[in-house]
Amino acid sequence: MSQTEIKVPNIGDFKDVEVIEVLVKEGDEVKKNDPLITIESDKSSVEIPSTEDGKIIKLNLKIGDKVSEGDNILQIEKDTKSNEKPSKNIEVKKEEKVIQKQIKEIQPSSVVEINTEGGIALASPKTRKFARELGVNINLIKGSQLKGRVDEADIKNFISSGNNSLHYEDKRNKKIELEFQHDEFGSIEVKDIPRVKKLASTYLSNSWSNIPHVTNHDEADITELENFRSTLTDIYTGEKKKITPLAFIVKALTVSLKKFPSFNSSIDEIENGKMTLKKYFHIGIAVDTKHGLMVPKLRNANNKSISNIAKELKNLGELCKNLKIDKKELFGGSMTITSLGGIGGSFFTPIINYPEVAILGIGKAEKKQKFINGKFEARTILPISLSYDHRIIDGAEAARFNNDLKENLGKNFAYKLAV
Image (cartoon, rainbow, N blue to C red; front, side):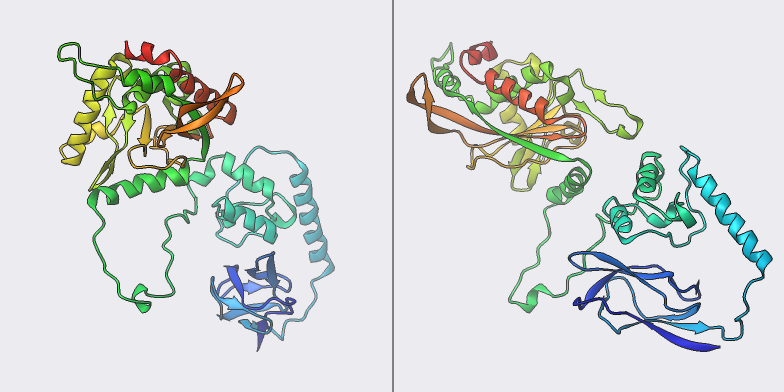
């Protein structure tokens, strides 16, 4: 027996390249040209193969290490006694097995096999990167190519078969270890995160990680709506009614949801190919409190008048700010509205309130010059930002939804909403 070091070969001008995969462990038997580690630079991923046959007795690298040419990867023990060549009969049988495997691979199959042997899958760096980006443990896939090599088609079949839900490598919740301490750079203060924000963080992370968000930005001309709103008075006292634009937006949204039912749905059973269409219209309202953001639901908004919606919005806001809102009132929504109009700002990307499939962001209305009928006019323009789940809503449908909502908020429609 003799020991040999396997080192990083010439990798060009790259230095301090990160090890992203270690494909072997101590005690493994490896053959010459078997992949040992995968390194990745800014431009490519490369597998470093073994230059010898033998048994690994010491592994000197781990994932995340930086390597350059000449660095020691591992130590290998070579068997110097066994140099006998296999008999011709053994070689023939081995060749027959290869041929049989090739024939089997040519035959089409819809069955996706899982590698239960726990070995290291054979795959190119490009394929490994593809698997990592999709969160798939490539070592669980039995490859369809020669010698069990895994290709991108195998990975896609593995995911579509549903097997990946059982073996998903969830890297999103892995904690990133900082390489420094904040107080190294100056004085700091550590405070407790407000309880409401801490509870909300789980839902926000889940929503952002699992829903493919797309946001359409648009502008609604609410000049007539604002003019009409300013004329509203109490029929008994004659005093001006304090009804915010949000009450009208809630009512307008319910009208659009009736016309576009996919926006009033949930797809929490997407793996079963099912979506839940809701027949109710419970609009979530994002309420800014000193404790954090809360989203109570305004129930059955489609059956309420503008005045009742305005009163209920005020009541929900007070309950949230005093932490007296019933927890159940934070669930079971159709779609959420989050408004920055009272603070400022225009367009933004609101995060969908899971398991809803869309959320409407409202900016601050402002006067703008618009070219209408051959001349410029001062109009009151409301910025709207519609985020939607692209798995169930496409861009064209979102644009049509925005157009319908703008029409609901536009000329002459305010009178109908107020009825």
